[in-house]
Amino acid sequence: MSAVRASKVQVVDIESALADLSEISSQIETAVVFDAAGTVLGSTGSDETRSQRLARTALELVAAAGQLEAGRIGQGDGRRLTQIEGSLREGSVFVVTGDEHRIAATTTPEPTSGLVFYDLRTCLRSLAPPESKEKPAPAKPRRSRKKAPQPKELEPDA
Image 1 (tube, rainbow, N blue to C red):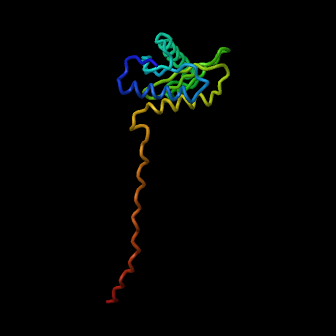
Image 2: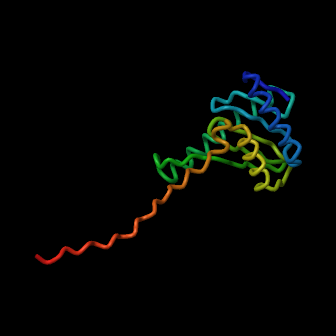
Image 3: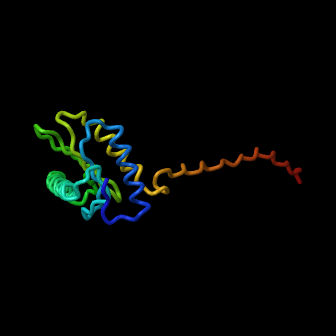
């Protein structure tokens, strides 16, 4: 696995996440984790040039699809493309975007798309900072008991 320009702690986490991904998803041939600028943070392949090309292509694919979608639904509605699949006879390319990281993968022909997307999203979630992984549920507001109405004392007629 290769890693380019990433902190030592993050590299271990990314390499670990990619190793898990490779182990559980037999349909994925190559996967690369990268940031919003296209900097490769980790890859299942040993060829850094190929990893960089996959990351760059994935960014271009997401940008192009985002422009098409924005033109179709109108600008400024707050939507953001989160996943995309491109299929070829030789295999498919999947891209999943997260808040800080993105992941792109190439697969064998005719993959089970839902499963590949699930595996890629799971990999990205494992890279999220600890505070965003498990946000505690908000505390339920405590109800105060209503006091039973006290009978009013009757004043004697004057």
